[in-house]
Amino acid sequence: MSEPELVALAERLLELVGDRADAAVSVSRTHQGLTRFANSFIHQNVVDENTTVVLTVSASGRPAGAASCRTDDKALHDLAERALEAAALCPVDPEWPGLAPPEALAVAEDAHFDPVTAAAGPSERGDQVAAFVAAGEGLNAAGSCASRYTESFFANSAGQRVGGRDTVAFLDAIQRHGASDAVAATCSTRLSDVDGGALGAAAAERARLGADPIELPAGTYEVVLEPRCVADILDFYSVYAFNGRATNEKRSFVRVGEAQFEPSLSIWDDGTDPRHLGRAYDYEGTPKRRLPLVVGGRTTAVCHDRRTAAKAGGDVASTGHAAAEGSSWGPMATNLFLASAGDQAQARADLIGAVERGLLVSDFWYTRVLDPKTLVVTGLTRNGVFLIENGRVGPPVKNLRFTQSYASALAPGHVLGIGADASLQVDPYGAGGIHAPSLHLAEWHFTGDASN
Image (cartoon, helix red, strand yellow):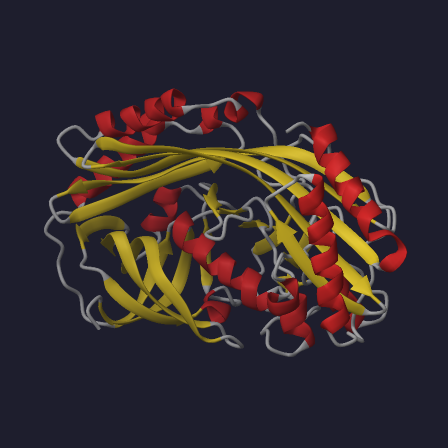
């Protein structure tokens, strides 16, 4: 399906709704290939291609929505009628914010598009898998490599029209040496940025070093958290902290204008940055822009969609962060960055060298929030934990459970170093990504071994 066909579908739906309601239409076509491997052997190649049409209407202040994967005229007619019938049954929503007005994109439509990745097939993904496996000679490798191409178009009855195309490629895999696993992953708009050989070699080295782990008692340790762990912290920030609905309802720990974070640290969201992924507008059709969230340790903003911006009042406007489930979850940052506020980023070796006694942690797993307001989270380490003594990486450590406030983890005085090794980590919900470095933190609370 071509871009003109997507446009025609959206315009046809608006025509079918007519003047019976305010309407917004989102049409997307996605082609995704996935190559999976285990025991160092590719066991699955799948390709999925689908077109999705989502219609949102508001009739006399009664909003409702419907979706379809069929695109023939009868299906579009049925979709319009279903949405209107649903709206007639819904109560009036006094907080309905109306439709996004016409506004141009802040970046080129194809800023996150690579034609080579769009055309990639099993052979190209298989080459990356083969390189990963070969780099771990004698080890067992498992994981997946994917490439995805999406075309999208948005239109509403207020006159907003935006569209674009984007690509995503990633490799996320482990090398296993006995009972020791080590992970390596990367993602990009370009499959050519995925270096299976380098990733496989790094994972293999870590897996071999992780054999015969020692057991450490529960307690509070200094830590160097690698990018996957830091990305997990930022993911929770997106859902529970920098979320306009959570701040409106006083469920978030963030308070705009206050110095809540380490002064050497800045956090921002930028869906227009070429290092990131995804389309250049949000679920409501509002263009994405760079949004500083923390500048020099001071909270400067939170994410808003049209609904939470209207609720916040004053001159607050949508920041382009509406999500598909916005009425339930609120707006979320899906293109996050964390970096040093100045020229203070350090090499990974220097972060480790500054630790007298602590832990190097590669990955978090099965993290779950216990208290959304203070962001107390519990989870497990995995894929490589090592003791650090006198600035040197020592023996591997058995996996541990932690219970830690993610809010206090990055508070003033708690961040002792920010790495220069930032990499793009895949958002677990597939909406974007998180660009995160390693961090040296003053303390992390481990509450038991992995069985507790």
